[in-house]
Image (cartoon, rainbow over all chains, first blue to last red; front, side):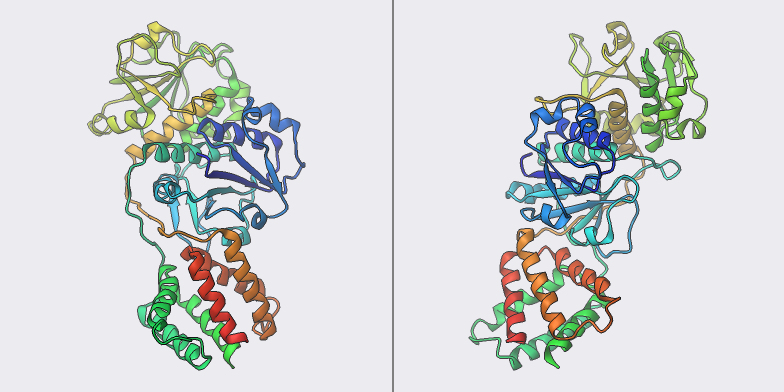
Length: 237
Length: 237
């Protein structure tokens, strides 16, 4: 599980950092990173709760911001208790682990990112991530603490990455109607033509296909297509 | 999950009983039975650790022996950290939950039985059970406490027995390392600033988050990031 990383963003209580370390190491994950822990690092209370985990793990790395903590990560998954108003795929812990099998096997580093105890992750932090993970719980009693969240997600990844079954992933967004996207893409092509972007006519179809792939794959919403139009206008007016 | 029962045999610490109650109720299991709890029942420390679970659950039942606690149970599963020298089927938590689907659907009561914190279940208690459940962990660091064991097993049963309707698979790309994407996004922000794109400073963070979301979500490859740089250069040279 060398390429799995757990990141705790602004953890408040040392006890929870220790519980998280113990939880993840039970399932073979030993790369723990902290972003701006409230009480600094190292932390005696964390050590007391870790049941010896820190002695077996590499040194915990500490960063000022989440952006700095994920520079070498290929896939960033934000854990969240509530659906946010963000356009991101939301997966259950089980689905997230299953969908990580292929990238994990091709050597990509996967970061599992947890927010502060009460507040969770900020929208800015979630924006750094490709997708969100949620743990389905009893709607009448949903009360998982940080250590429990880390435990369950680490468990699912351990189960999935040891078992290595296969799944057939696909995107799950709510994209704009195709014509909206086409409108943007054809305007982009015209503007690129005007700005002499296509040095070689032979390569033009390949480049256009690549550009299309990027935008199609993300499943852009109508609002996002409007934003892209705005950006294009800013550069071309 | 009415027909799932959790039984703690000779639990020592009230805190662990509370943690077990909280853990199981998160996954819809509300029938908790205790066999000869060391400190009697009720227990203030249990209440303090339960995060309100006892207020939502039916009364905890207390018994002198495991045999009395399981009279109405159809299937008894003994949880164990180590394989014992007993001739019983041993299943992982996942397998045990999967194999419970059919009996559960036909109305049988299933008991998940946990032993004392250190000693675990006695051989006599295990002899009352049809099968054993074990949770596969990191062989180099296997340190699950009672509350964590209940959490993981309750989670597997909840996953198996509740309706499996959701399936939200993710994108399957080979994304560039995070720092490559950051390089493009920060350049884009600078250029947008230069081109007077942000009419209102108040909206700038929201717009930037939206732009980031678009590009992060697609899981851009390194080649695609290079293409985006090229497009930006064409418009800004």
